[in-house]
Image (cartoon, rainbow, N blue to C red):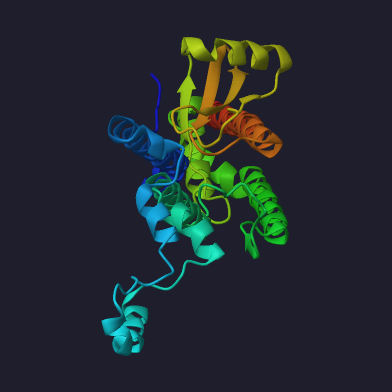
Length: 326
């Protein structure tokens, strides 16, 4: 019977997985809006006034060519009031258009350009949002945007964490080879026999709990098979049988929460064959994991053999003593 420990993918792991897709979807929606809005305005312009697609609108033309001369006075009777009329006209008429207004005003008032400017503004805000919360860019070491530079990962801190992780796995190996682990194995003694699978599952659970702590923060599930294994693992099982070492398969995209990383190890204890499968959605296995789980199987086998041998010797000594007494 297989012992399967379901690995739970946390809410934040799902967030990390979905945010890059959300980022891409937002960009696609903004670009789609820009395209559709431009097409609708283009269709409307063609139906109403096709010339506006290529020429400046009449409104802008009329504003550019505003008459510079005030209305002429038709009779000499009004000459005394010329100065007053010119003053009133100069205060009511708009100022003459400058060359800057002639160039900029049509661009700013164009509906097409308004869509482009709004779209670019939305894209800028969307990108800055994902830079402030750098989940979509967490693989980057450094990102420079104009004069702003974002530091996502600290290389020195990553190196320190690597050393801490290696040290943690080394401590687990030392624990498995210690007398304390041998004493725990002795607790499973039942009628001079220890069930290898039962002890293996116990220590797998302990390693699983240890991986969840700092600095690993890793989760995995494990299964121990002494019969048929899932079909998708057949290649890994054949590999570990041929090499006598653990077979590791790590997925290419570690952000994909629908696929797993696998560590498979075939071990023969006596006449029984066992296949231990360690799987994880988020944790990629390395060579230290390989050595750790191989050491686990070998140490358990050695401890069980030693304990059963000592129990057999004790039983024989007791039987001999009883025979002498008789």
